[in-house]
Amino acid sequence: MARVLIVDDSAIMRRNLKTIFVQAGHTVVGEATNGGQAQLMYRTHVPDLVTMDITMPNVNGIEAVKLIKKEYPDAKIIMVSALDQRKMVLEALREGAKHYIIKPIDHATVLKVVNKVLGTRIKESNEVPEENGAEGTGDAPFEIKNIENTFHIVLSPSLNEENLTSLMQAIQGLLYVKPLKVELDFGSIDKLNDPLLDKLAGIVKAIRNVEGIIRVVARNKDFVNAIKEKRVNELAEIIEVSE
Image (cartoon, rainbow, N blue to C red; front, side, top):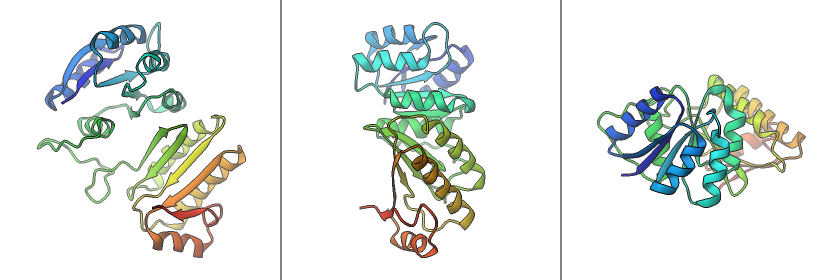
């Protein structure tokens, strides 16, 4: 079980997160209301995990990530943000945050992200499957991670027209990053309809238009061959089978 520091200027949000962590067996070692307090509490407790709000008085979440990561490069920080803060989330990821959660939060989503960041998977009798889960796997439609200055965008079979919009909004924030390196990973997807493929091809084109470097991979060889045969613009020429 992890020792967690919760950072948020909202008492309600801190209470909700604390309830989720305690029920899951984690220990909340401290609660901070701004980034300055977070830095001091991190030094005192050196927690296994931090949940970090973005918009806070005095020192915001992005600045707090910078301060903590400078002293503790291995710090595991999860950003907690509103849907309209994607650009700030991406900035926090560039500064070393490991992952993010979009408000409103819920028990299943928080624990899913926490377990990924901690490298564990804890099954709970009261865990609720996510609405957008893929064939009962609980996978989110997509994930964006910053690994060694490359943004890894991993898609799941639950990707559809509705949640693709959220991905495209996130990509708009990425386009401001210089230099921009992206890996688009179709993961275990074995089939997508043509409109979705066309929009994903548009993402590839947008990244190239800002002189970004992009690699496109998929695990399913038949899926890769199908895209090449369909000659989907921007995808067919660069997609490859991941090892």
